[in-house]
Structure formats: C-alpha cells, structure tokens
Image 1: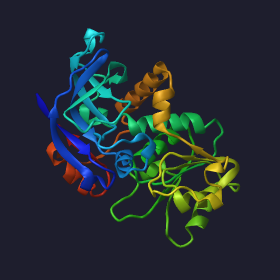
Image 2 (image 1 turned 90 degrees about the vertical axis):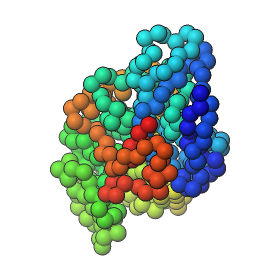
Image 3 (image 1 turned 45 degrees about the vertical axis):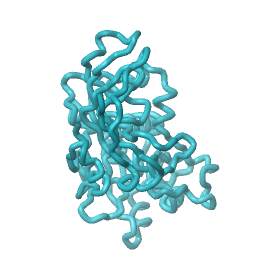
Length: 323
C-alpha cells in the first residue's frame, strides 16, 4: 500500500528542498516494527541537518524528523506481541516526517496512557537534553547559570530544572519582537543582547567571578563573549549552533577546555538502555507535573508540512504536524 513521506532531496533551506513523495509502505523485518505516525514536530536539529551542517552522517535524499509519536501498526519476527498497538516514540534516527516509519523494536519507547500525543510528541529532544545536561553540569553548590536563547522551549525547561535545584538562572535573548521568556518568574534576570551595556548588565546578575555554567545553543561571537563571563572553574556547555558559526578559534574555540560539547545523539546511542528509559520516565513524570512542556505555536496537517517550514509560528512555540 502507498504512503506519503517528506523527503529532503538535497542540502538547503528546508522549505525549498523538502518534497512530499508517494512511496510503498515499509514492511518490518526481523526485530523491526512499523509505526503509524500520529504526530511529529520540527526542531532546529531537523533544519540544521537538512541544511547540510552534519555532512559526515547525512546522506541525501532522506526523510527528516527526529521527534514524533505513533502507534505500532506491524511487527516483525522476534518482536514481543504486546508491542503491537502500543503508542511509542520511535527514536534513534530521523524519519518521523512520513506516515509510516520502520524502526528496530528496541528503539521504540512506550508512551504512558496518561500522556496525550500532543505532549508525548515533544517528550524526547528537549526534555532529555535538558535533564541530561543539568545532571552532568549542575553539581551541588552551583551558584549561577547563564542560558542563551532564553525564549526558546528548551531554555525554559532548563530554567525549570535549575529552579528545582535552587540555582539562579540568567537568560539571554535577542529581543525579537513578539518573543519573550515563557515564565519570567523562573529567571533571576533576563538580558537583551544588543542593548547598550548588556555585558555589564549580565555581570551585575552573576557572582563577582562569573557564572559556574553557561548553556549555549548559539555559538559564534556570543559564545566567545560568554567565555569571559565564566568563573575560573566554570564551563560553557555547547549543545547547539543556531548561529551556524562555531566559537572563533581566537577565543579558544573547540580547543578551550572550558568548552564542553553535548550531543543528545551520542547519549542516546551510547547510554545503557535502562539509563535512557530512566530519562524518559523522568521526562514523563515532569510532564504529568506540568513541567518540561512545549508550547504548540501552530498546528498543520502533514500535507501542509511545507507551509510549516516556510512560516515559523508567530510568537514562538513549535509547529505540531498531525497525520
């Protein structure tokens, strides 16, 4: 039977290079399942991959989409029978932007019955990144943290987790009209980049010797400037590159021991399965408690995916793609 898949035919801007194609529905092989997707989303990591930022692990054409939720529609030989009909997050690879995704059964994370698709769809990339980074880089007695792109969904989640640990968080924003932090009460202060004297404003919100940790998803010159705001023992955790530019070599660059990269992909593919499932259990628990949620900025039927790629949601939030 045929199905529809969104295919990135070459590297470039997603709205220009992603095309909807009719394909044969996949069949599961031994140890595999086919998941009928019910919802997916668009992440910056999707757009960067489509743009060709990761050439060593991206082969075009391919079906993008790292995050989505669906129902196991078919199972292969050797797959536990109780997985059929279960709602799952099919993780470990791209491919959520298609009506049916084939994946190894071991990469399917069961979704609890009390977590709706609208929440489960966003329970992977940002929550696991935020939980893992706070576990790794916010030890006891951390005095202050700085978070870039503070109006983003993941920055708000970092602020929630830092607040639970009693760590003051200072957010940095670009001051984009219509964009602001979701909950100002979570932040010790929010500094607008580009405003006159923003480095002094930031310094005034931090301990005299600087921040213990900076969570940066921007890179480029901003990352270089923030190295100067670190305490002597501090670390800059780089988990994204929204600027498309690395921290300049003159500022230390990748060779600077204060810069610690974090890649969710390495965690997901390298962590023992019980540890990974434990992170998901914690993410689901936070969602039940009203934390680590992602605001839906716009909802699009799958057939209108290219419109979602052309028009980011006004005022922030993430697009929800419904199958």
